[in-house]
Image 1 (tube, rainbow, N blue to C red):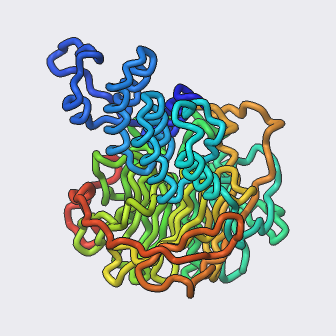
Image 2: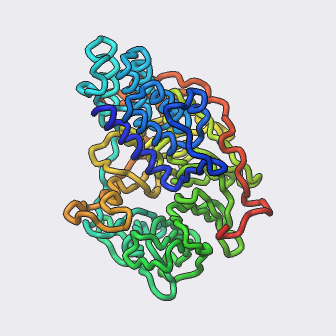
Image 3: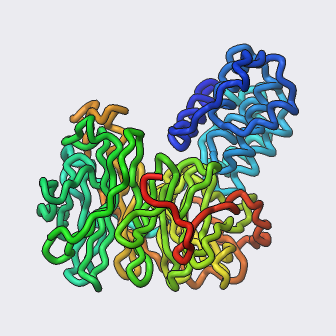
Length: 504
């Protein structure tokens, strides 16, 4: 893997999480400055990752390594959870022959839990062969070892379904699955067979199903649906339409729907979460807004220009806090009564909280599915009493061979069931299936949420024993870092009177 390849991977990863970011033109119509005239200070004042990715490509092409280093350093500051960006920076240090900085960067990555096989990587040829190199690369490779006791619970049929969401009906003790392609919700038998439950009709007006959540106690099923190009019934005149639909969980009958005002711009309601007393939240991962159902409508309760790609949502057990994952930036929270956001404090030098899709609340802990981490993993974060700091960390399952692109799931008792191999990458940007022969059966993976529960003693993060599948020596975890205020200006809240109407 050469530097160019590493930079390409970094750019692709960043593009996936910042797909809707826009770059502003130079003020006053002035021509853009010469990239090769930019100083280190100017580059490190940049705030737009996509513009920096383009600069990095220019500097790589012209072999301007000093500016390439400055650019990658700034990118790593703005997107702190990307292993690909850290790897790109280390590879440029190596190209410069700066072994000390390359080793330091790679060692820090290994301590954070990143895993890569770099032993024969030509991008690091100038610094390879030393004892330090062998030590660092051996430990990075060890982090790739499969870990945990989870396994595939069942598989869903192979086909053009694009099954991206799961829910569990505790009353009828059965799973449900949502299809983006068909706009259908299926009941799922324990052997994975599908039974059609809800389908798009003129009455319900469903589009592609991106997220579902079951409230068995109140006989309700909530469906987050969007008319996207992935939906087989897509109509251009309905582009950008989306909403949350409420059905009877027992009968499938439509009860209510809460629609966003269409404006012909892209949006995707891709995540949904239920709180206490009928709270319903849904996130738009394209526009980076979180809505709540309020008085029969979807109202904006979270909107912040610094966010890059909102993914998972989870409500605390007491219903007082909403947590959400930003794919690039990590996990944040919202005090629902006060209508104020906060950073989740954690030791960033030992823990990576980026690349998260699914996020779930379980017994005073957050459980995250990190498909943007290498290795891909499920991790449990037990929080302090105030719910604003990480107290204990435990990987539950990591580097499992079944993990293609693990995404979203649902909780049944003490188990997390989730889609382990999303098929979305098989479709192009226009929603066209590129190669039907590559479709696989969708694997539903089961992780034990109480795995190694008693091993979490004090403020510790557990190291993974390479290849052993067991928890080894506990490592002291430093005190959580003080929040940097990156998410301190959120608007709205459950009790706030200034929530914005849907379609804002």
